[in-house]
Length: 82
Length: 287
Image (tube, rainbow over all chains, first blue to last red):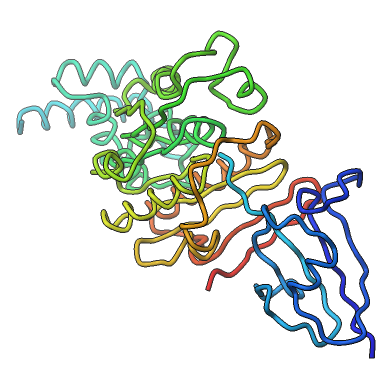
């Protein structure tokens, strides 16, 4: 069964700086369970500014979390400015 | 002193009779009346304001706080000291809001001077101010709004030694810093001094706020290990647009009110994360 992952990436974390708007949504499909870290790696996310990773709008997960079913992953940037 | 109290109460009662609004029974005292009584009784204007509030006479400058903030709560704010660590984007707006709210004592900290690239977002920065110390500008702004507020300024950057002196006597601190390593220094000091602090940070059109008490894990849950962060040189490409610090500063000040007055729902063990462009608002649990 295909695992569908909706990956929501703030522009700052995306390598594609030409995208319009503040966020970029990737609709991904994996044939087998995959770690959050692998999804991030596959989509060339800029790790330098990566903060929280929110699973299905509720739970903070880390890169070793194994995704076994379809879900939404939302990435947040680390904020430093004042 | 007892004689003084009698004189003040007598004066305040006269004001009460004169200013009472027959419809709602509301009495106010003006800035000039406050100054006059203060001078006559050898007191500070804030002491007169506090005496008036005890008699249920509202200083006119706080009249529009009333009903949201009670007489006793306004007294509490006037007696409080808040330390604002950083007087740039967030700090400039925080200073303005806290001064108008009626926090009686403010500690202002920043070792920086204004530069041209601050003009897009920092409330206290103007062309005339370029090259001027941020704390100096903040103190001047407070004086314009309310000269009775007692300010203490530290025109230097914080470090693990000076921070203890800076936050001493403060009821709470507000994090308006621009780097993570200094935030960890502030957190450690607040833990030692046993005071809460209100964390805020901004980037582009994104901002975040959290209220951290001394016994909470706090920043570690937001940023991970402090060891990851060195005091880096700021990248000239990092952006912050003017609405972001104004909004996040407002949330931080709202947290200050709630913590000082022990009311409402505070963002403790929670991180409010706002993306202004997409109107995406998340409250993340910090556990």
